[in-house]
Length: 322
Image 1: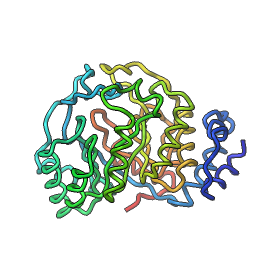
Image 2: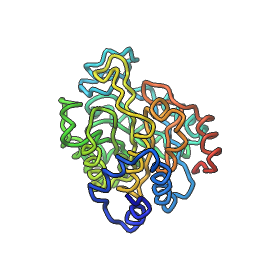
Image 3: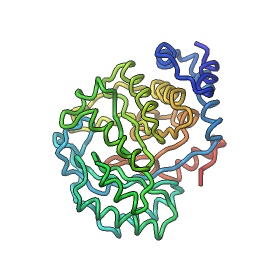
Image 4: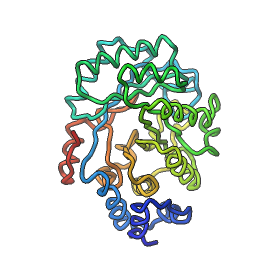
């Protein structure tokens, strides 16, 4: 496989064939440097050496009726996690200030649950207004399934982005969640775009999906034309159905990130949860295809501290995007 040629096709707006996409996933260890170089060519064209830093805040924890098998906050999880309703406005504002201090370009507040109640939407809108008035940072929310009416309230409050992941392919979705459908998720993403908010939408790999499932997800994200793509690398938390799952290697993770870059060349590509435990010593290499990372942990698991993330970016000769 000529990965340089694949990079050129990507830059010209051509969709890779399924055979080409499978060649990326099946690249040999000897081909990995060439693959990363080709993916970096595409990444550099759109983002140079800039790296976006994002910070998450678990605004509402546990208490979720859904059965998402990967999640420690789901109704079927036995993992010991904190359970609390939506945090007070002051706590969420304080976290936004800390996110800005950590060099984050975007601060994302996440609620567990199927979707927000009207009261939670109104409360979150007030939080967004408060943060916008005091902190120069872009705000994202991940609140579950939503209709256009609720999304419009958040947009009017000044929210800029909504995260709602596809998580996997349409075929594989029933294997990881039965309390809502893949189509429910797609509908929410389309609602986000229809009201004029930017869409953050990605997935999780390492949940027993096939190569075809990864290809299908990459193509679905391209078809939806989302703005930002977080790729989470399964952190198999004890007490969840995926406890003990170990389907990923550092090189496999890098190949998947390269595939997402070729199929969605101009989109933000973020290395999400599980980066530290799955990529291990190869973490820096993920920034050749990706242009964004999370720091200071995830929802219920720790992660790389901001100072360590800054050092990794600087050691590569990259720069933190303001």
